[in-house]
Image (cartoon, rainbow, N blue to C red; front, side, top):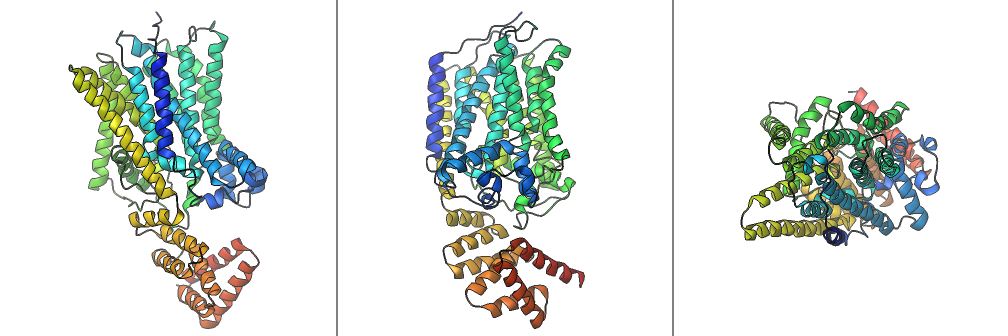
Length: 550
């Protein structure tokens, strides 16, 4: 017998949507003029696909750029449209990122409402404050400061767009399953349009970012946690969704490796290349850091100087593994309890599994040199928020005094306000390049990248002496960084200190005076002709010769 979902007051939905819109705008009101940062000067502003609509195959001269465009084609199309409308004026790019984030926040709201309308949640005749849970989930998602990197960092539109299509696909799938007669062959045509929309949104998610690979698994999890029926027909209906799993591997099979972040961070001493085992061990600690950022989003950082762990029996790694194993086991236990008691526990379990599943691509055994990034939390945060808000309201419903229930609601509202203020403050840091990199340098003092980017900004402003201080600090941390070395040589040359540049070359590569001077002349010749790649190749060849002569 089909259970009719409980009706949800229209007024409550409208008020909730208005609050989500307002909180989202307040949190990001100061982000629209934030400048391009970091690798946006490689993947956005000089990108021929964005500037002239060049084909993917024509980008073969830069393999990493070619991979980026091929794998995240839909995102790159939106950048192309941005450029066609207003060039590289940053405001338009930020507006699109913000709209994507607001849509995602509203989809979180609709996702929670849909979950509470499923047969499992309605089967016991228990009424839950679903609108309140959905509203606070959407509000916290919109306001949480950990989302700022995925929203304000323009290049990470890939994270927020993948999240938006991921959520849209799941919401449309639930809408299809909740439509009258959707599970029978005589279902209404409109119901199957919802399903077609779900599959299309899944394809869009896959072409936005690679972590969308987990979407079909989340849909399967949702199907078997919240719906009933015979397994075989349900599996057949899931087949088109599961077929979307082929999109990313097929793109890789065509010669496009999908570990895209490797080149983005190379040469900047963000972190070292690590083995699969060391990466996995380190991710146990990283995931605990992610959980801490959910509860206490303080000391947020763009480039973490995170340690690599090599042994499972290191206390920090082993303790993290035990905590994460307990959390995962808790999800399974809550599924078991939900069959015998409060069915709301299954929502909490679903959120826990969502968190681990959506984080699995970037925090498992696939090594990505950037060990930790806050933008990777954009999609996993949905599961965490869903679990926490539902848990709070289940506790709230057990309170007998109306005053105590009001206090719980007021505390949640206070958290939304605090998070919104923290997001606004974090966006202030993104608003200027020098302040941004100074913040990174303060939090990651042993990392070369913030020194290097701070130096480039000083150089752009004509502050050559300060630029040299930062460049030399970067070289002291990472002497093998070719780009920084070339930047130092160019600054010295512009200041008329060719002798110092020649001496630096001689000291770095252990060259005699004549050899160092010859190398300097060759570097200046190549750079003067605009042959940047050949200049770097020449310096790398000198590095190889030095190492081979040891």
